[in-house]
Image (cartoon, rainbow over all chains, first blue to last red; front, side):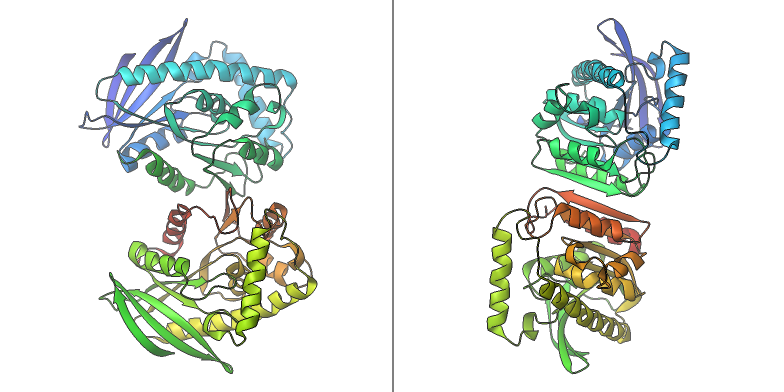
Length: 260
Length: 260
């Protein structure tokens, strides 16, 4: 893990890093409380589709976890996202397509093609490899991790998060949501991964999501194997989760990862 | 409002009162922080079927609202409950029937008879009258209410709470749940009351409730006219809401009623 730069803003230290994973460089950011080298719980933040490791909501959450919980937070660019975009034009097309599906209204954009579903599964595999290597590197950093890890990731962050959380025993609590089972049910391995999860889950879902049907979201919530799992349903579309749900994330991680 | 007795335990003053409403006496309890006469927000607590104003979960919640939020809390015996039971045998039969329905397993006890539905509507009318008279009396007590009221009531507390919250403009936020629309949909006035509600609602629902189908619960959540409403779904039966949901009640009332 190579630290590229470091800055501090209102009590939060932000360090930009590069991590070599197989033949790729995964760029990431670590946020920690200023003025301490005490190991603490780490929240891994998985951003949404067409986003990157430092979009406003990721940055806001990371700073919040540091300031409210006394934890550290980490985000990395997902495969084909952020600084890992190798084809700017393809990324623009993807972004426009996603925005078009959201603009098309509730329930209109629920169908993805078989090809698209296969690409998601493939991307989720790469994402899992990236995060597991990142956790290894975070554990190796002196004074950073106390061995407790949480995961927060909605939408694409859940598409990548479900297989990750299923495979990675070091993650002990996760916030997931804005995602459904739909085309990913059955033989792809995604549903099986969901069913094998046993850690506590907070699952947030939007009742008028333009990208997922209600049934698809309920199916994914039902598939999760965890004994402790809660679904928070709010009215509104994919990008309209009420800000007060952030209090729920705090409560949830505080409950399961203890104090920072 | 006649204060019958007063006691104090670990910072919480508990006052037992009687209130004359039409030709009945409604018995209730007020819980307030010790050593202050500053008016503050009041949470009205509506107990469940076959319960009363001082069962363990009502008492626990009331003390919690006082200690965590600095609010006051009030519970009254619902019609035909607690000290208002005039026919002990009928009450025992009702309790056994309810326990039987819960014991019969998920979704088995969802059907109530038309007669039973009519009795619920009638009881809800009486409950609304009781609560509105209680709010009048609470406002008249010096140093008690600052004009802000919340309502917390699940199961029968929601059956009585929906018409109450719909009619009573002094209540500005409510926790409801463990209840569905089912037989109460349509012309009974209950569904219309739900649709007329516009205050923020936290709606808790159990995914394996023995008394309500999932669809019935979702239908009631959908019927609520509020722009801000959140449904919290947890696995388990009617009486198995996870204790951590109490943190959600705190967050919710703190957000909408301010600080005590």
